[in-house]
Length: 288
DNA sequence: AACGCGTGGGC
DNA sequence: TGCCCAAGCGT
Image (cartoon, rainbow, N blue to C red):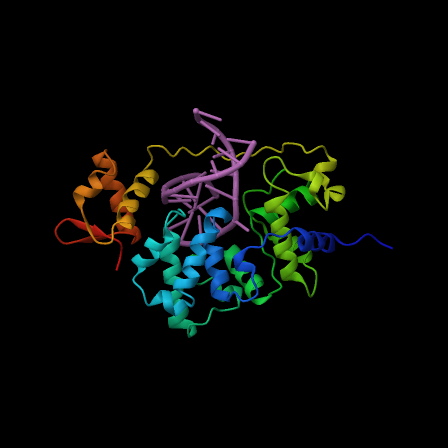
């Protein structure tokens, strides 16, 4: 009897080890999947869960969110980070209502046209909400493939045509979507960036990187400083507006960030992004 | 095609 | 303790 395929081993592992995440429940709609995927862009699962539940309850369909001012989405975003995603989700809901009759499109190329939906998220929604047989290449999947097949500690910075084709070729027919979520889960739980748990890995025996002694193939990302950046300033300013049920005077923002020049630059940026609306009387609010 | 964009938890 | 990171996207 031949060895089971890579895909079969990963899917069997998934059956035993998958987390019971709320957006994987059978009754979740494509909209619920889409919202989860956007929230999960650069934000850990544990922090997404409660906010996602709240959004599902409050805005069960795209039309429900589209009916609200964009500021409601920004406020309900809470502290997930990268709040432009909330704005884009509101924009996606609006576009789904206006261009697609309120129905989330199933075609990745169409999903890709929605604000905040890039290559990864389009593929993820198509696969996880509609069962599409498309390669879902996120950082987890790419890391697993880099290690198992390419003797590298991590994937290169940019996805090449060759990488996408290889990933597509690995999709098992008739169970592509389930396989995709399974590889992703393996990367998230076992084949993690630092200190991979190879003793728990179902494919450790066929991992090229492990066989080679897990060499450090370099390319570490530059450490990001945060303290004192415009980014932090933006976060502080927006937090004031999120936590206030109504518009606030400029003085309230002055208190949130001491450096006047940087504060002005950050506020200009927030306004330019559409995250903050300047009002009469030197007041500011979340966008209508 | 680098770069800007939040936030909080784990090691 | 800090540093590093977490299911990317848009410009």
